[in-house]
Image (cartoon, rainbow, N blue to C red; front, side, top):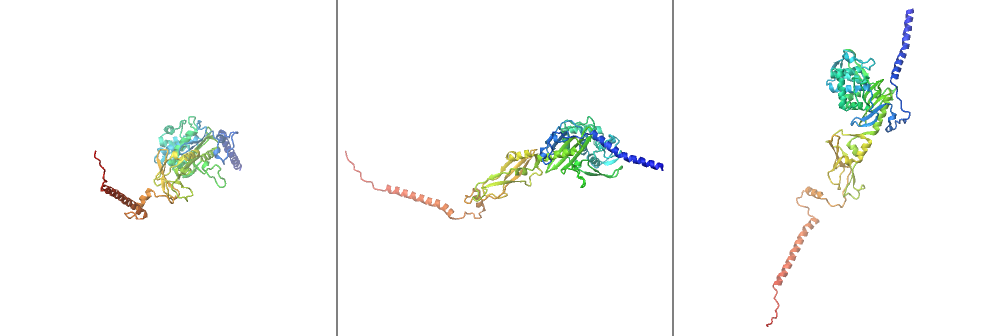
Amino acid sequence: MRKIIALALALALLFCALPFSIHAETATETARIPEPTLSPDADPYDPEHPELLEEEQLYAASAILLSQDRGEVIFEKDADAIRYPASTTKILTVLLGLMFVEDLNQIVTVSDTAMMIPDDSSTMYLHVGEEIPFIDVLYGTMLLSGNDGANVIAETVSGSIDRFVALMNETAAAFGCTSTHFANAHGYHDDNHYTTARDIAIIAREAMKNDMFREIAGTVTYQISRTNKQRARTITTKSEYMLTGSDEKPNKYYYEYATGIKTGHHSMSGYCFVGSATKDNVSLISVVMFTGYRARWADTIKLMDYGFSQYMSVTPVELYNMNPITIETSGYSTSDTDRGRVQLICQATENTARGVRIEATKNEIERLAANLTDVTLIEYSRDFVAPIQAGEVMGSLTWFTENGMPVVYQLTASRNVDRRENAPKTLAEIRQETWDDPNPFPPFNFEMGLILLVPIVGLALLILILRIVRKRRRSGSLRTPKPVNRYLK
């Protein structure tokens, strides 16, 4: 009986101590990663006016926002300061796995060296000797931020982690990263493992060009196949930015336009997040470094909302519609209330290249629209003389893409314009009427008779005049001369 009581007391003490142990661990982690605060001089952030975002309204020590399509920087805050990237490193690791491994469904075996990771690493819970599809390792590395998975990718691609790290540095340099050096495949802190917000954004932009990477980065849940060591299991992303929460407990940091990408944190790097989002055909990439656990989501949302308030994507037709062309016609009907003015409609044709878009800041788009005739080639295929039919092709507009490819659109009349009632026929109309008349001879009417009669009458008059003149000359030559007085001297 005493043994049972003693055992019960021991269990009670154990369960009482457990919460304090967990709390102490959390407190220790919080103490290692101080939560950043905003400057007391910063103006309050107004979510109703995201276009007014200022650097001081971000918790992150470094941040950058750029367009995914053009790589144009839209916002930045100390983006070139050297920072530790933590697990955002895995963006490049997974990308290289996709670039250099052809068969993503091949089975790979987890080695002893792949499992040589720090004890406090985040993992995807692999085991030495586990045989697992490579694609599952890619998903696990991204969604669970598995350091073990990153090492498996490294060894699968390069045969060893050291050779893979060399490949990482070569690739980063090729992408244009000038302040980056990697020391491992997973991002666990190393003084020689560093980057900048700008460089990480460059890497993320390159990664998001890969279709499979975009699919992985945008995945919220994924099922890992059964292996020789584990049963099938479902994993969920660590990015609260992509999680809706529940009806009872909605997630206020969920962003409806989110498309990825990767979290990261360590005592030396603070909390980091590389985000992506797409809205109204505009795709953005953001990076926040050395920020807080919740602040990384808040900072990212502020950046994205700012970007969508400043940046836009339009087709050449939409650009044209911001400043459409109106032509002045001649010979229009006196009853035309618009005095012959016709707005031209820009339309794509079957041969027009699809998917052509123009991404730029709103100010730049407005400038392009205001100077439409300077930034496009406009050619007219007919004169502006009435009559004009609605839908009639009046000319073309050619937009040249960034690589110089011409994209041609039709310019058509938006309405009918009748000809002036007493306007003389044009030469083209006369020709057309002639060709349309089945009678090979011109129709005989008063006008035609007058046309034919005038030369005949003129000829007759000319003949008559000539005859009269001739007759007078002849009668003069036959007249008897008058006698002339002659005197002899």
